[in-house]
Image (cartoon, rainbow, N blue to C red; front, side, top):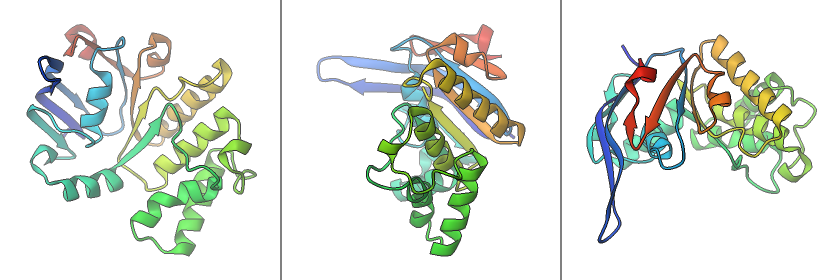
Length: 226
């Protein structure tokens, strides 16, 4: 069974006098343990797909099944629960909490899940140490390099042990060598069985994935989606 499955998904935004068709009948299937890059130029529908895959947005038509559950039929509260337990997010801009230590940034998703303080601390430390940040636990975002901030963001994404990590242009704000380090981290996570979905406009970044799905004008290029 597919972990992520979009079936004939469309997403249309009503901009008043104009309707923007961001996705046009997209169908893709991603299995557990895959490392997939969704690649395409600006305006191709990548961010819209990211929002739907991450349960942050809903399709206008079609269906989305996450680990066998058709999430398009769920209410907002149920979507939020699935999002917090099943999906880890990594963004281009890191989205770390300012004036807050790396440890507390990583532990925050566990707080929302009701995990006790001692376990939150232990799991956050383990995640940061796994990514080579054991000596940066007390550092705030402004005290970390861009590459270190993104590693903190990855630690935060995996601390809840999600089924899938969605990474939206995760190397976009990084120097080349830092970007390569982050991509190597994703490859390492995938090697342990983690499902990774990488959103990017850069074919060189997409080449790190095992499979590419190319979007053009809101549709899948079937030659690269197979």
